[in-house]
Image 1 (spheres, one colour):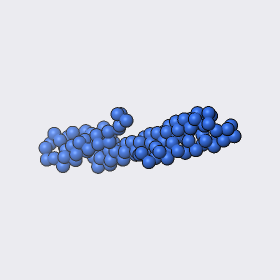
Image 2 (tube, rainbow, N blue to C red):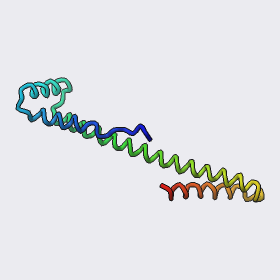
Image 3 (spheres, rainbow, N blue to C red):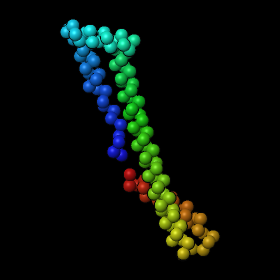
Image 4 (cartoon, rainbow, N blue to C red):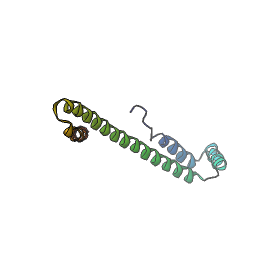
Length: 116
């Protein structure tokens, strides 16, 4: 997956906000005051919100990776099931065709699971 979510984007912003909030420079203090006035929250609450956004982005990224893994397992299972079904169509009698397809599906999933 090339388009992974970037979960570490907030760290430079959080660090900058922390540095500005404890800075003795008057302009930095005014900037923090304007930011607090604009958002209606104090600086600690803004930083906590950034932390929770980071945790949410990490959870979404893990969920996407998990669903991609499940889709890959399903793809391998269907591929092997259809391949075994085509081979069984020519080799086995009709009564055993469904069993061969089911075993091919299970074989495909187990091979994909071993590879990951």
